[in-house]
Length: 156
Image (cartoon, rainbow, N blue to C red; front, side):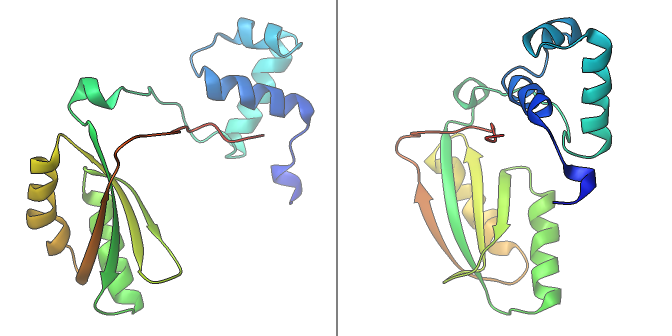
């Protein structure tokens, strides 16, 4: 680990609390992590500057915003060239229904995580968007029946 990314136990405490509550006040964060408010603020600023904290977000309930169906899709491209990979990746980045897209090693090229309203909306997404993305030869869809665990918290 390079010197720029070294974090100590105090940083880890800060990161654990901030992952659970990104809106916590500096005063409360300092108290929970046994720091002065000034030291706490300095450490959080340093963690942001070093790129360890990359942002803050509100976590939404997918059911309440009309995105109840979680889908995973394996994507196989017709070509495995740098140009084909970049064209597909660029389109995936532009596609709002795609929450995550990962190039993977194994029997397919990309794994996509998408959220849509329902199966009809997924069918529309598949037929109008996904199969028309650059280079797509084949897809395999996995509809999630039950989410057992879904978190953004990294163990630190």
